[in-house]
Length: 196
Image (cartoon, rainbow, N blue to C red):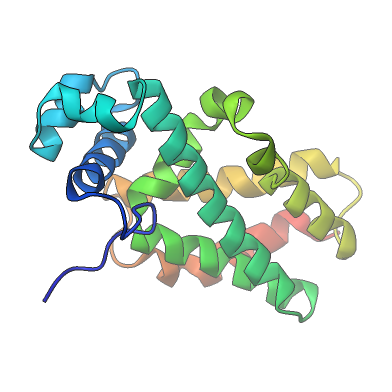
């Protein structure tokens, strides 16, 4: 039985590109983009350095490609969770569960976005920039009965900081079991922070 491809790999990609993308995300999430050499990425994929340049102009171009794919998947999960209807708490719970579900599917993808957002956000395409998780979350919080004692920007930062730190704990084995199993506890923490 053939294993399913990760979401950031296209089935139409040549096998060498598929392996390169999987190897690069693994190393970028574990070691960081700066610390991962082109040679290390190629070796992890089982190829030589020139294979990377067949598909990408540079290691940074490869990293940006992966960043946008992973970020947009996170946005898609958030939009679907918030767009399915229900009250504020239901939608918040779905949002947290969908992010944690993605963490279970691909911890490397979630960790990579969290760790490299500051570096790559200024370089994403205009199309990607139109899908801001911060803007989406801020608009969602504006719809709910959320405290006004704390600036909404800080609430958004606190919310994503909570999920980001949990993603690190999960990725580094400090949380045992499925990430999605922590959803009720993370929802309770988020509600304590958000409610008036």
